[in-house]
Image (cartoon, rainbow, N blue to C red; front, side, top):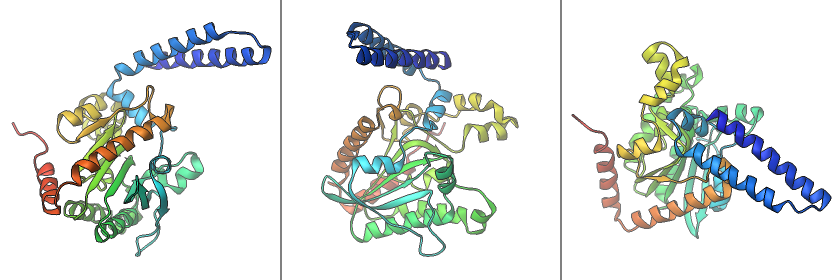
Length: 313
């Protein structure tokens, strides 16, 4: 994977140089440009057709991967962000508010990572405090009151585990979200768009439909954490990723998620608009399926969905 990435980088540099030379000197290099573009596509297909679980981990964590706010901007209309948990403070690692999806009012909530060091510090690298989950629950209860569907975007290494977070009831905040989401009288669709880490992800993941982007991951903890616990050696994260069953395909096979949303060749960061269009298509299709159900059937089906997960041998 690393050597292929290096080859791709070199070819992309050559391609840009040829295009610049062609434009600057008025020379027709269309045949050479087309040849390199075809080679790049061929190499990308080769690189991304057989990704290992660890490759998927690195893609899910890619610094250029689209964030919740970037998807909201491209998928929804009239988004109005709402702030605070009405108890402690506003947690910037969780964003949420009201929007419309093809004219339908919805509540959108998601983890939010930063694009640079300054923003990552502000967003706490997408790791929410208890007040973030309480803000999310406040918005969910508001959605239930006004009969708005809820759409959750999941992208977090996990809930923040600092002393302050524990003092303010991190475990209770997550547990309450799980309990309340299980019985909310409104449709819920959750999408893992990057990292789905531990209870920090699950706190937004109790949905009637749960989707994963093709190169996202979803697990009880990070591969580094798993390796540190199992082998007392966090450097064995790559080996851990191989056995943890954290990829979208693994989780679809186990019935943990409903569907896999395909990504553009090379990952969602290569074509944010195309990735957004695909997510929107799945959202509309999922919403069309669950809107036909009565509230009683919706809640019963949600309950059954999570009760039936897993295998017993």
